[in-house]
Amino acid sequence: MTGKLDLKKIERISKALGDPFRLKMMDMIKKQKKGCQCTAIVETLDLAQSTISHHIKQLVDADLLIAEKDGRNASYQINKEILGAYIKFLAQYES
Image 1 (cartoon, one colour):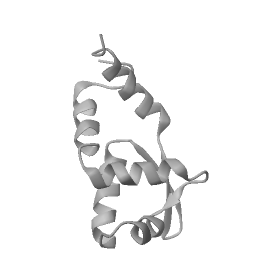
Image 2 (image 1 turned 180 degrees about the vertical axis):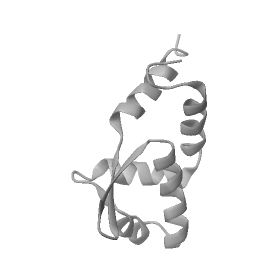
Image 3 (image 1 turned 90 degrees about the vertical axis):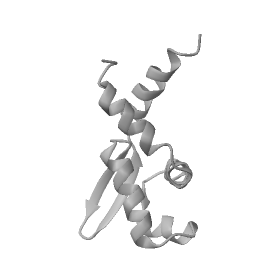
């Protein structure tokens, strides 16, 4: 166990980050100061809304994104605590 991450959680995060579109989404979301809505991602990436929603669900299920719902809309932010713990886990393999 590493901090709040067990091996199952580390595997889920690794799989979620293993897709190039999800990495692009993480980068887009990171650049937004007040969260990023799904519609903004759809407008930027050349993917269907349903595909974007699927990728976002994978990132949310891995706890990499925090969703803030406002009615039918959701805004997403990076979960810095989980991402930081994951980076710390990976850093042990640097040496």
